[in-house]
Image (cartoon, rainbow, N blue to C red; front, top):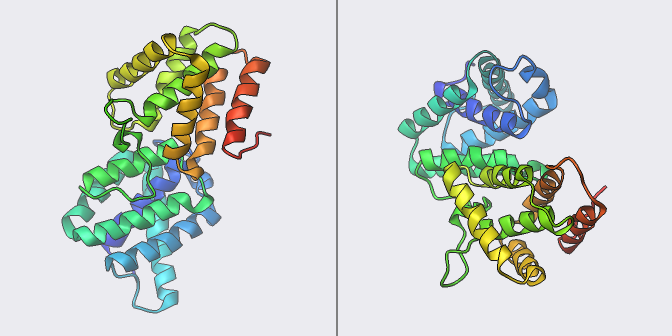
Length: 278
């Protein structure tokens, strides 16, 4: 049985999410190999669950027909995004489903999308950006498992938010070891913060860096770092902490020299989160 247009749109959205996780972008000739049979099988299962939750027909009701129909939809989506601009296809699919599904059905699909993103216990910035865009397009309430620093409450009575704490920790890693904040390190910090703020303008991200830098330059550095790490531990879900550590390593490497002191500081932060670095 051929997939319905709604099922095809659903498959396109899940394929786009899988591609965002695996770093495949645009008209990439290697997309098929990046989304290998195992990944496509995972997508098929997720699409089938999402379709059931949203009331979208999959096959004629039998389990074998459902598997075949879902596989056909996913294969078609992979083939289509291999030859067309992915963002355009995903946006069309998102808009079409918004026009045809109820708000409850869209919420159910969003829950399945988040579950699919978390299947490997990791949730990176690209996945966050992708799902935040869908959440806004559907005017849906964010899933409780999503973490967005834009939606995090600041410290009482101030405009200080967890993204400022992230900036503070990044600044500390970049500066504390060698006493120098290189231009490359500031730019790397802004880029990494921007990945956690998918809706923010570059100027807004730079404002966050400036505010954190001002407080960093005028405070007790050690106490500020301890406070920021404590608040980040509360704000960042466990499955996203490895992404923060990865970003810290990226910032440390921005000036092309990673000192022992920088590594030790990152190891200490990872240790507070119960993480180990190879």
